[in-house]
Amino acid sequence: MFLAQPTYAPETKVLGGQLALGVGFGYGRNTTDADIPVSLPGTEFSRSEAVSGFTDLYPVASLAGNSGVHNWMTYVTGDIPVGAYDSKRLANIGIWHGAMDAGGAYTYLNQQAGREFSAVLGFTYNFGSAP
Image 1 (cartoon, rainbow, N blue to C red):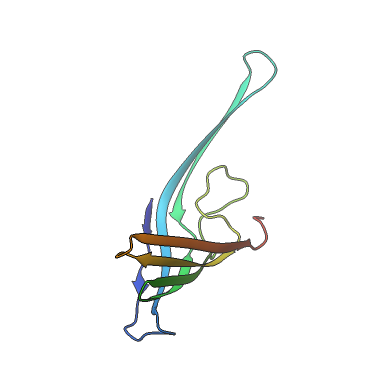
Image 2 (cartoon, rainbow, N blue to C red):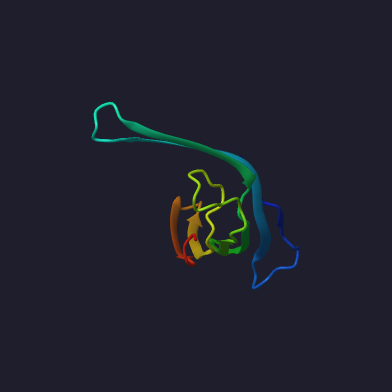
C-alpha cells in the first residue's frame, strides 16, 4: 500500500504555535482469505477476495509550540469515506464511515535537571456504520 500525507506549515505563528495542515490519501491492494470449518467431517468452505483501489481521505490539522521547558501540541484529524468499499466483499480498503479524532499533548522537558514528563489525551468518534 502507498500512503502520502502532503502537509503545509505556514511561517506565520498561530496562537504562539506552528500550524500544520495536511491530507492523507493512498492506493493499495488488499487480499483476504476465509476458511470456515463445518461440523461435518472433512467439510470446509473457503472464500478469497482481492481488491485494488484508493484509500479514504485523512485530513489533519495540528498546532504545536513551546515556551522554555513547556511543550504542547493539539490536533484534529479524521476519515472521509471515499475509499474502495463494498459491504458484500471480504476485502476492502476504505472503512466507509466517517470518523473524527481530536487530542492534545503536553511535555515538560528540563534537560539540565534531567527531568521529563509527558501526557497525551485524545477522543475518537465514528459516524454511523458501513451500509
